[in-house]
Image (cartoon, rainbow, N blue to C red; front, side, top):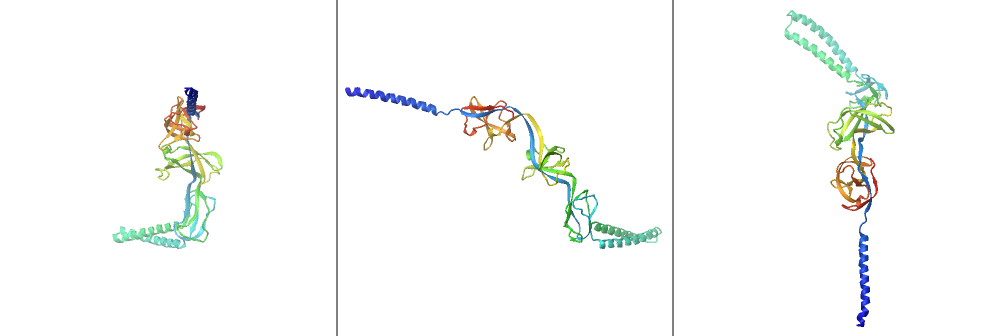
Length: 351
């Protein structure tokens, strides 16, 4: 009996320790519950979105031609003033043509004699002095000589290289006395008073660019903006790049605008005063779509969105969000659907 009495205090102590241990475990379990995540948020407000596009382009001369002769021959005269302006029709290069000129004189002499014969036979034919057949033969010979003369003149013209338009001559590639083939590039001529601007735009904007559309551009090393007007667009989209090629006429004049120069072309395709813009970092890219985390009643909810125009620090939302929604902008990777959240900062600035 005394032994039983001795064990009672030990049982009481063990029970108290057990209960206290259970209470401490409950406290530990409560302490292990995830606290509310501290995040930054952004309240969606209407914003002004100006759809500005910036692409690269190149300046081209309005007209440019490689000067080449049609026939082979020896150069006997050169008028290719490098870097100088020449008028349309100016003689630039002359090839040896003495043999052609001699043959032309021979044909012209034959023509003069044949014309006299034709005149006499015309009078005889009227008086029935010759047959119709003889008269026709004389007329045929006259026209044959005239045709031979035109062929000869055409051959002589091929020994001359004329300026096709008003322009500036490039670097000369030949010298006086050189024998050149028909494929020899003599020099180049460019029309410098006008310039063309070529650039390409993404396929999705192809329907926005029309003839007469105004664009602005800058050149390397110069912040000044120059004006150009769209002249035409290519007939179709390039298969490799999925871009549309556009050509514009430069309306500005400057010694800094040089053919072949690199340009940065900018133009506006419209504006939206009630666009939904959110910070770029709020977007969660997924395999087939994009989503954002919207805060509702202190919990995180994932919402699929459709995006539009992307800016440097913001992106347009076309579908999925409404004005007044609160979206999470940081700590996105650590949040799950339905997670409790609390805000460190909440911004409602217009982007």
